[in-house]
Image 1 (cartoon, rainbow, N blue to C red):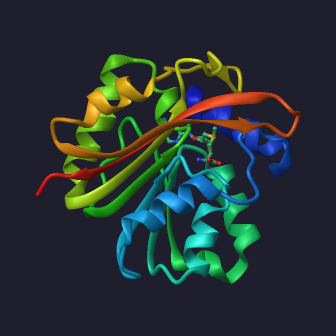
Image 2 (tube, rainbow, N blue to C red):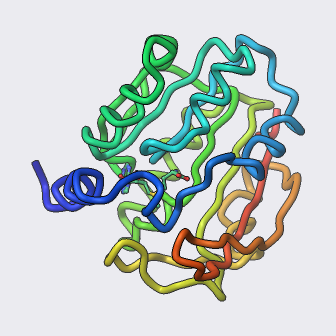
Image 3 (tube, rainbow, N blue to C red):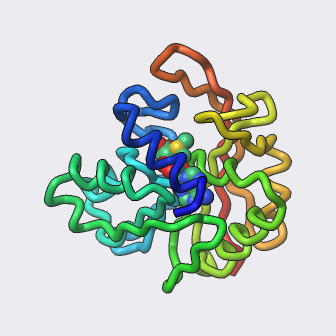
Amino acid sequence: MNENQQHWDKVYSEKPPTEVSWYEPMPEISLNLIDECKPAKDASIIDIGGGDSFLAEFLVSKGYEDVTVVDISQNAIERAKERMCEKADQVTWIVADAAEFKPDKKFDLWHDRAAFHFLTDKVQQENYLNTLFEAVKPGGFVIMSTFSDKGPETCSGLKVQRYSVGEMQKLFEEEFNVLSGKTVDHTTPSGDTQNFTVCSFQRKE
Ligand SMILES: C[S@@+](CC[C@H](N)C(=O)[O-])C[C@H]1O[C@@H](n2cnc3c(N)ncnc32)[C@H](O)[C@@H]1O
């Protein structure tokens, strides 16, 4: 197990779900953006760094049949599975580092809230983006949320790479059409405000 995995497994073994700074009982922004993409119920949807967030659970409850969650932390995934009980069987769970992960299929929709920004090394960022570019089908969608240029410089004790809306869109504009881009404030359970960049894209046909 590498240091990064150890870090995240420790976080998920020590902090209850409602105390992690990224906690949101209802992933409203993500769900709204996913709705706007109008995926079919059998669309393949992947949540990178999904942790034990409620997104997969909401998607399954809404009738999506092909949901995959990737996270570097086994503990996070175990926690999500336990919470979801038998609904967890409807999700494909993968423990992997997003900087090295190679999916064995293509996706209609790629979602990432606050995982990509932990990749602060250029090579890791390139690996992640190359994997995404290969894995998202033509016409498929990408929804990315990271700390904005006005957001915190660290999260969970780790340095993050912050992106303005323009910087995020620049990463995608060659291969994707830009659908939306905005900044939003997330209020953490301890009452702090974190400014996020949230963008959505559609892969050119
Ligand atoms: C800030 S949390 C966000 C969790 C979730 N996306 C949400 O919105 O609630 C970051 C998540 O990314 C995972 N993560 C961090 N680095 C990762 C990596 N290199 N590959 C895969 N997952 C990673 C962590 O384990 C954690 O679950």
